[in-house]
Length: 169
Image 1 (cartoon, helix red, strand yellow):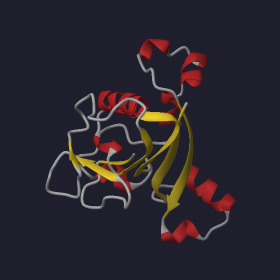
Image 2: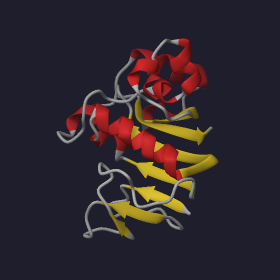
Image 3: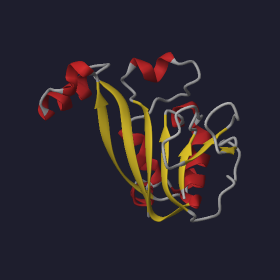
Image 4: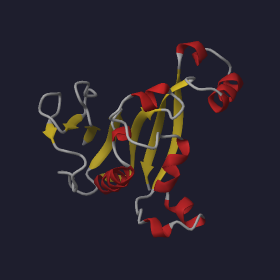
């Protein structure tokens, strides 16, 4: 099974769309802030989630990641796409929640990192490995990797979106 979580009107082809409203491309109408989700444990091979995760509060993000972990098969991959924290898009939408997301936001969902940093008391129990990529504005997309890395760290509105690839451990 492949899920497109928060699919809206742009469901990824070949995926089962899940959204809170029937007024979109959802195959399954479900509020993703309500757990458990209507999917069996370790039943999902792949997840796509674009422009949804940033709408959740901090507590809801933790619940989301716990459910994501529960429904994904070991070794399955999830792709989450959110506005990058230094993009105006991250803060212009009044329905986006604080804080905006960056690479380090995902460290909390890796068990080894939490243990090394003494954060067992956070109550987070999912365990994902992750890697990420960046979507750059047109003005920066053709620059060298060195120029892009410098600009990403020092300027605003260089990166539009953060693409995070999570693998369930």
